[in-house]
Length: 231
Length: 248
Image (cartoon, one colour):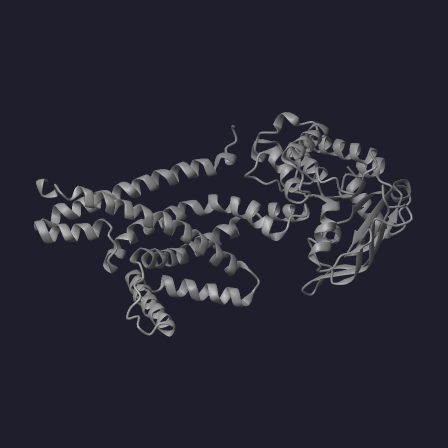
């Protein structure tokens, strides 16, 4: 354990990065998932095709590959664009935080697309019809009737997606994100104690996932409050 | 709107579901304050007809006018019509995730842009009217079917519609709950609400309706005031139908 002294700080800030990536990617993942599901369920052929391609590509390729492609791909693209304006520029560095967050949001968002789609289909058409009959617009029906009824059905699978997001954060260390696994690698290089260092990383991720799991359980309880006969 | 101008007018309306012709040459005109009961065997197009009136179904032939407005794909006109046309469904269709009072407030807030306080007052007013104000903070599933249907009626009334459509409002109810819903409907009729009711409650038709319409095979076969309709039906098909539902 004494090997750990001097590394606690780094682990702490690494954990903060994990949480930051989680929160940012959670927001993006929900947005991608909702747009994807809405597109798949729309009557617009083009939207259906684009959303279909999205889920095929991001569910069908290794996550680490997507992270690498997005990181280096966006750096190369941005460099090329920047060089048009200023030929002196050699390389535009993309922050690993945002490249990585964007990548895992896209990946998990593609799974969420399918989860949300299924959940939207599970909403009883009666209340949607009633909402239209009351004169609500389709946007109002979406946000006030479809989504609030859908999320309860989506929640169990959505909890899994949140866990995937957290664990995928570790993958972002490969492009140089300062999260806990990255810290561990540095610590191992200095102390030569891989087991201890990796166990700490494991415990950090485990505690974050436990909090998420408990939160999802609480949300499920809340989401089903109107399904209990006794008030 | 004067009485001369019909509130609802259907002119040669037709509707197909694939090869199946659900409605054939429907001509119907309803004036303000009129109470219409529509009956007929299942699959006769009754529900389809009233669902066309607020465009939950699109008609594919003829024209439908609500007041001055013709029902087309124009969304602005459509929402203007839906604000004025209240609808009550067979299966209540309350929003399950909202309390009763929120069910009544939602469309007022979003569609009528009523303030929160006013929406709440209006909601409580109509809950009193259907005699269940004490259920305001419960969820739909915690109410009986009859109570849920009364909430659904109150929800439609909160929008202060010009006309109310009832699509078999008592068909999904246990027998002992039917009368509590019918009582509310009779009250509404007494207050002069324009109503079109698809129902097999012939007692209700006799006591409340100005006109009873009989449909079969997607067509209006017969329409007459209730005394005439029940006392002296003209068509053989109507006689057969009445003898079947009135024999008990």
